[in-house]
Amino acid sequence: MSVRIASFFMLFVPVATQAEQLEINWRPDGRFGYESLLHGAAMTEICGPLDASAVVDWQMKSSTPIDFNVHFHQGEEVVYPTRQNGVNKLTDRLTTTTAETFCWMFTNPAQNPTVITLDLQLNPD
Image 1: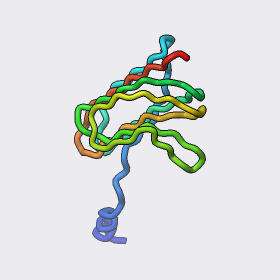
Image 2: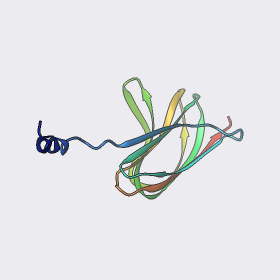
Image 3: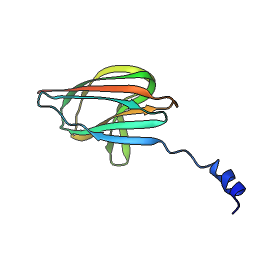
């Protein structure tokens, strides 16, 4: 295959999105905090198991609008307690009804990097 033909086909290969998955490590006071630079066309997912009837107050921020969700998987289905696109600040409370691994996911659809923060507070029963 000539270099010219190979270069032509490379135009149709999708560019891979950078993805990072992190685990929630709760501090003894029930808090978790994260701040990082999220590159353009990249995704960060921060996940951890929660018991049934857990209550987590959370806040996310980003320096530019991004796509954000909180989700968990039930078999093949993805369930989204929260999902918004083009947002740079959200505050909410997650109350679980089943024991699942929940993920807070940041996706930067733009080419420019953005600073993201996530603050979680696990509330006692």
